[in-house]
Length: 303
View 1 (cartoon, helix red, strand yellow):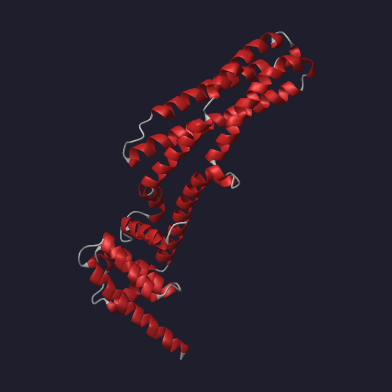
View 2: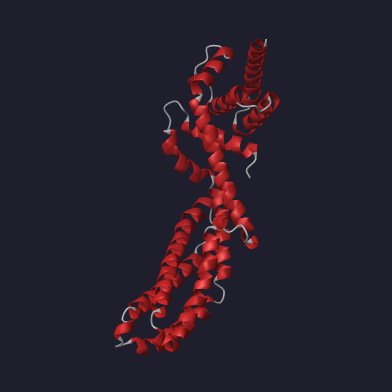
């Protein structure tokens, strides 16, 4: 799971990019923002996914040769048999898709894996999706053939060899489904790394988006509180990075149960990483005042 520090960093980056004053519409910004922020993690996930597929594909070529030989042997028994007229087109479709699968896999194998994060992600993501799409079509065609062959008991002896080869190839596809959606197969220990990586990326995005939405929903109240401690406050007069950090931290001070000391310390760390040389002192001073005001208000309410 992502740490609170990772979430805060992502929130500040988003608020900075959106700028909230005449910047990009936050809803429209989310997809390109996450494409950019998650490039490095996405690259690692895509490469790990390819490596898992590469492992699964070991021995596939031998199974494919066997299938083609058996399909050729079965074809004469189907020709001219009215009861089996549906099978040759399905068998031809399987053969075409198996060829497409091999080409898609070969394309993946030859993609450069040591380019920059953005380049690898932009090339591997669609290539993997193409392979998964072909594989799903293959699985449907194989199931169709097996179902239709089951309706022809008189040809069972002639069709069983090619049917067995189809089932052997389908076992690779069954494992491929697990690689594509490892979160649906928690019992598969060998997919734990893929599962955890996908889960962490999804969790970081979901939590960050939720925090951003909360800051946006309370922006007026946040700015009012900042205006109470900053002389002649106007959002445009504050450095965009400092403004994003202050808004996030002020939201936490006003609307969460996170201890003020933790909020301020985290904001200082964000200022060190993203801000200017003056940001740390500026952010610390403003948040100390807001925490004091918040504490005094809470005490007055309790009294």
